[in-house]
Length: 574
Image (tube, rainbow, N blue to C red; front, side, top):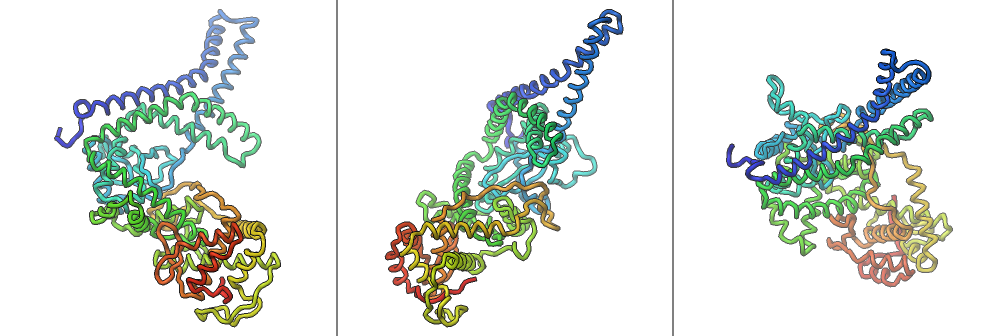
C-alpha cells in the first residue's frame, strides 16, 4: 500500500470504529423489518400447524375444524395485505433531488479529481456527479429503478466490466452545490469534497445499503399515501399503508439517525489525511458562499423571476456578490485575495452552459417557473439587468400605484410639460401620472387604505396570471435531470405597508430617472439600485418609510430637492 493511501486499521482506527457503529445500527433497522415480517407470517405459521395437525388426524373435529378455517382465512388476509404493503414500500420511488447532471464529457477534470480522491481514500467512486443550486454537498442513492435519472459513464466501462466497476455503478451520486464551483478554488473544493466522497465506503456495505433502502421505501410509501386525488377505496387502502409505514418509521427512526451519524463520522475521520488544513479554509468559504447566495437569490434573482425573466448566470453573479460582501464586511476581508488562484469552475468544459442550466433550475425550484423559455419567461444577462428588470420593475409598480389611486378616486394633478428625457409622457395636463400626486395623497390621508388597496391589486394580478407549471425538462438539454420538482417559497409574504413602500420607492425612482438624469442599476447584495451621478443612493428607503409610516413627507421632499427630481413633471409608465 502506498504512502498516499489511508489505512483503516493503522492510520485512522476511529473511522473503523465509526463504520462498525453504523453497521450495528443498520442491523437494528433491519431487525425492525425482520420483526414486521415475522408478525405478518405468524398467522400463516399458526394456520400451517392447524392444517398439519388436521392432516395427521390429531387436531380434527369440532372446534379444531372451525379454528383451522378461521385462522387459515385470517392468515390469507394478513399475507395478502402484507404483500400489498411490501410491494408498495419496495416499488415506491424515493424522492430525488432536482439536479443538473455533469457527465464525464462535460466535466472531465472534475470527474478525474473525484476519482483520484476516491482512489486515495480507498472507497468506491460515486456513480455520477450532479449540481444543485444550493450551498451544500451530499451523496444521494439513486439505485432505485424510478430514481435513476443520471448516468455517470466512465471510459471503458463496457466490455470486461469488473466487479468493482459494477459496484461503482450502484454507488451513490455526488451532488455538489453549484455556488461552490464558482466561488471556491480547486484545492478548496477538493478538500471540501473529501469527507463527502469518503461516505461512499460505508454506503457500499450491504447492511447499511439495505437499511437505507428500507427507510427510503418507508418514506416514499408515506408520501404516496398522502397524495391527493385518490378515490375513496384507494384512499382507505393507501391510508392503511401509510399508517403501517409511519409505524415502522417510528420504530427504526432512532437507529437510522444513529446509523447516519456513524457513517458521517466514519467518512470525516477517514478523510482527515486528505487536505485537512485546507478543509478549515474551505468550511469558512461555505458560510460566506451561503450568505452571498441567499442575498443574490432574494434581492437580485427574485425581482427578475417575478417579471418573467431569469438571470442566466447566477453562479457567476455569486462571485460578484461575495466580492462585494468581502469589500463591505470587515469579517470577510482577505477572502478576495484567493481569486487569483484557479477557480473550481475551470474543471468544467462549458461553465456558461452549466451555469445557465443551474440558474434555470434555481428559478424552477424557488419560484416555480417553467422548464422552457418563452415570451413570458426568458433569460436575462447581467449587463441587461438594470434596463430590462430594474427599470421595468419600477415602472410596472408605479403604474399599479396610479391605478389604485384612480380606483380610490384620488384626483390627478395637472402636469408641468414634457419630461426631462423627452420620452413618452407628452405635454402635461390632467391625467398625467406625477410623483406629486402620490406625495400629496400620502401626506394628507391615512396610508392604511392605500396599502390595503395596493395589496389587493397585487393579489388580483397574481391570481389572474397563468399558473406556474413546474416539472418537465429542458427540451433537447442533456444536462437536465428528470423528476418532479418541488417548490419552496423564497421569502415570506410582504405586509401592506412594505408593498406600499416598494411602490412609492418605484415611483420616486421613475421620477428621478425621467427628470433628474438618474439611472437604474444593480447592487449585487441589495438588488435594484438607483444611480445618481454614477453613485448608488442607499438613503432613499428611510425617507420613504417616514412618509409611509408617519405621513411625514418633509425628509423625502428634501431628498428630491437635493437630487434635482421634479415631482410635478409626468413620468413614463408601462
